[in-house]
Length: 415
Image (spheres, rainbow, N blue to C red):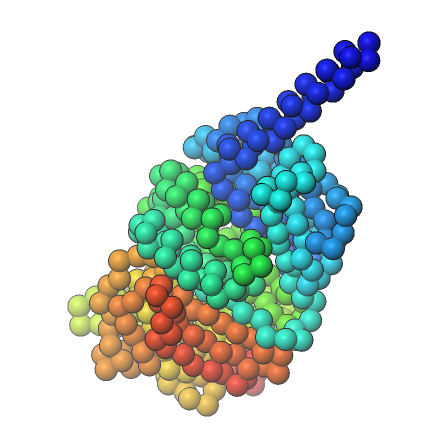
């Protein structure tokens, strides 16, 4: 009887080990996001090929020996066969390194244990994040810029559209994107770097005015979004708010989205830093009609009428916008004019991993301070006293543009 029980235990252990091993082999992507408070939560997301598999994450602070577990949800990213599993961990300690593993039981094999760090509750030292858009014309371009971003050791990456260029159809493009992100997007301490996403035209069948979720099935299928929609705010304590907007890809610019934006900005007048971002630019660098500036495009005008007016009304830190496959930094702008004293800075124009276009020059477009046909990312460092440093890096690590703002936010309108 003793031998039989021992054999049964060994078989059960082997089956469980095989299950965990199969889960590792089957997994095509692992990435971290936030649905709410980044100081006390994290969402662990992974994508598998098959329906069978665990939905459980084991986690603990790096200095603890006691594992906790939590099970999450599972859904298929239709119309593909890819299986998405996600677990939101809550009640975490701010500014703390955690380790975690995925499986039906805790895993002690260090090769299978991952790490993440929660965000600080207060900004007591400089914090760096990376922004960009238009990520993957090719795996080669994507890998190069992902590797560059990771070397900067950011707390997170804020990506605003055109993630895998799957156009709401080609799910297999996400396989390349997941593999690159999972392998390369790690900090100097080995932790996984979280991603915060906004929607762009290449997430959507037809690019604009898409139905939710039918016309953008993979954007809505792979990413659990704050507020469960493509426009939202994510607050980091009282020191930072990120506002992601949908530039008419699956939500109209005017109407409910603008009404929500006004309310969101009004609620965040006490936040030290506020960065709105979206895909299609209000102050673009390409795609102009003959004899006109890119900023005269009807969608750009609609964004300025509805959103920029609210940014200027309440005051924000700077604005990120992309899509045009170039680099750009504007002059400080206010009321659609250059205003070096009280103007708002716009950074773009979406060239993380794409073939670049030839941009309008500062001589051609009055609002541009610098433009260039160059793949890049924006590295942003926030300082506790309110200073903001912006550096533009290419994939080789060259800083080819930089600027500093000495105020955390622009002056709100006196109304």
